Image (cartoon, rainbow, N blue to C red; front, side, top):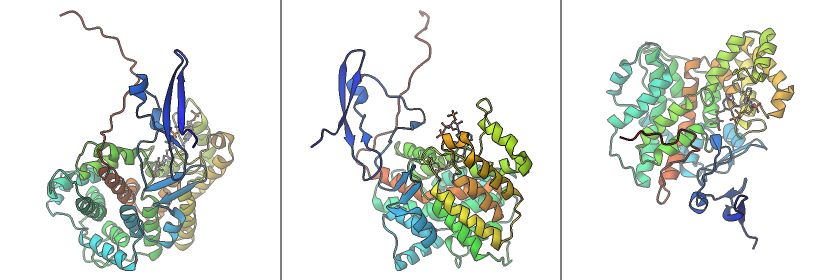
Length: 426
Ligand code: SDX
């Protein structure tokens, strides 16, 4: 049996330290350095955790080189084209795809639980007009704990699933309310005759006592976007959820923290930034100037929607969204002004040495922003759409952490570069 260890030698002393190699189902081997400090008296350093596995997980797998993404062993292209978002949400939470009957009852439960406590509306009234919907959503999810406060310790599988169903069902309603309030629009309640995604679009666009037509292609496009966003290993917002969960904070607090982390433009806020950037570039003639800025090491300007920590090939989700975008252009004969700029950027970036050398391909946010705009969803709501899709993933990761024996609180160390002790005698 090969010796499944890695040996590290401190060349200053010749000391040797062995660390076990942990074997994954697939993907890179993992060196277990949890005894590193105890054995060596040293820390390891890994800015941005680029080489660090933070947990054991059975939920989602990404092969960045192949551009592969699987939820619980099912390829993303299969789930996005053959299944619905609620199929994937159920799969992430329960480790199996639902049969027809199970999906029907899961769908019914999501409808019934989509309503929120009327008292929550007073919270929304407190926000100024034009408050960003992500700020309202994060506060709203945190406030769920004041209206649905069973008890702080959620410690049984039944309670985990109760929290999961409650949060997945209510987030679209809070999300739609966040937008309605930010625009001073009347509240639209969930319609029990509509499916999960159709209901969200209805709550976003509807008016009291007024029928609105939602095109099936729009509902399907948004449902696919939710599926594509449902989970993504230990990205920044999922890591935030796990870190907060490791303190035994309430699940509403964990998800609200994930929403806050996702908002950043380097993460889930990128889809909104993509559109703002395309609007700023304005025309095909200006593209070269901004590509040069993106390549300039002294210019902080970055091409929003390009690059990814893990994918060093095409983001498989972007490939699927690109097809949806083309379908929508035909079906809804969309204004292709912004798309012409996006297409020019994509053409240049995919052939330019700077981007090729750094494996900077279009990511999910490059296309999702354009599609959401085509669906007439306001750009302030793009990250909110990301939250609705990602919530089942965050909660599945939260449950996986809670089910561990002796949860260890996340508490990294540091490379201290501050002053030595300079306290005066006193
Ligand atoms: C999401 O992690 C996930 O899974 C996230 C996500 C999910 O589903 O949860 O996939 C969702 O967040 C997608 C990413 C959305 N963000 C953007 O589109 C923002 C633009 N992209 C960059 O900010 C960046 O590419 C990141 C944040 C996505 C990745 O950053 P890394 O892995 O830390 O890479 P880096 O910053 O170290 O960059 C490596 C090099 C640098 O150049 P050099 O110093 O080597 O010369 O690539 C350059 C960077 O300057 N670079 C870019 C660039 N992204 C990286 N240059 C221009 N434009 C860019 N977009």
